[in-house]
Length: 78
Image (cartoon, rainbow, N blue to C red; front, side, top):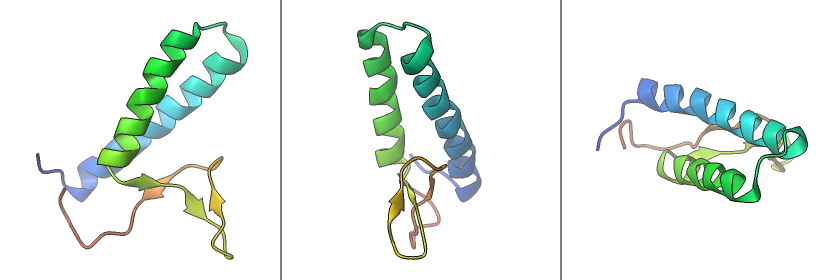
C-alpha cells in the first residue's frame, strides 16, 4: 500500500478525531471498557502504521496530550 503525504495528513486529522472521541467516551459516556479497547487498538494501529508521533516541546519532551504530527521521514510515500 502506498500513501501520499496528503493522504497521511487526512488520516492524521481522522486520528485526532478518534483520540478526542475516545477521551470523551471514556470520561463521561459510560462506554464499555471492551468498546473503548477496540477504539484504542485502532488508534494504536493508525499511529504505528501511518507514523504519527507526539509533538515535542523546545526541550525535546513529548507532548502526548497535544495533537500529534507526522513523523519526520525521508519516505514521501509509505
